Amino acid sequence: MLELYHYGDSLCSMKVRLCLIEKGVKYNSKFVDLMKFENLTEDYKKLNPNAVVPTIVHDGTAIIESTVINQYIDEVFDGPSLTPKDPVSRARMRVWTKLQDDVIHPAVQKPIFNLLVKPNLAVKSDEELDEWLDSHPLEKSRKLFKGAARGPVDEAALEDARTQFKFVFDRMEVTLRDNEWLCGNSYSLADVAYAPMLDRLAQCEFLEVFDDYPHLQTWADRIRDRDAFQEMRPKGEERFTNMEIG
Ligand SMILES: N[C@@H](CCC(=O)N[C@@H](CS)C(=O)NCC(=O)O)C(=O)O
Image (cartoon, protein in one colour):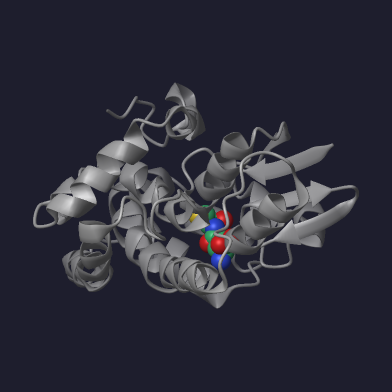
């Protein structure tokens, strides 16, 4: 049996949920509430020393890092392959997933922390924040959460996110002009990695970043049409904003 430690409104958790659903792999859901800092318990840190979601536990072994987890799932389980057969396409797929980890994830975090996380953290006391966040192993996360908890929306961070989206979307647009999916004509782990940003940016009401990219928008429509994408999305109370996103 496979256990998935995850959170509803988390881009990286969505990546892994989407992969599992596309593969038809059943899992035991272990919900880790990031807004209650459940990721910072000593028990969870034994599974994931970075204290972030997602983590899977398969046959008693914990595996971390959403991109690595998805490669593992695709290798180990039956179901449709999400990895291209030829080595050049596989290399391209890994470059796409690296760009998603290195650029898109930090870019998406800027609107998420400013527009969605901030109201949830603003209600917590300084003592509560210090008690939990001082035990966070990642300095990056300590800064993100503390920065989001206090002060106004950081407009410069939102602008920086737009610049980062443009950097990646320019490349996606060129590829998607001639290809149905990011690695050619078959849907792969590259598409799985980028699909969740559609949900997260919709929730932040940030979808105008796609305006100048007609081929990217066609790809996005294809993604939204997939049953697995709809199933992967958190429902009602699993959302920060407790609302369904169109
Ligand atoms: N590189 C990691 C990033 C994981 C990550 O940052 N997860 C976020 C949610 S998308 C999280 O758990 N944040 C809580 C925290 O930083 O304390 C992965 O891909 O799994």
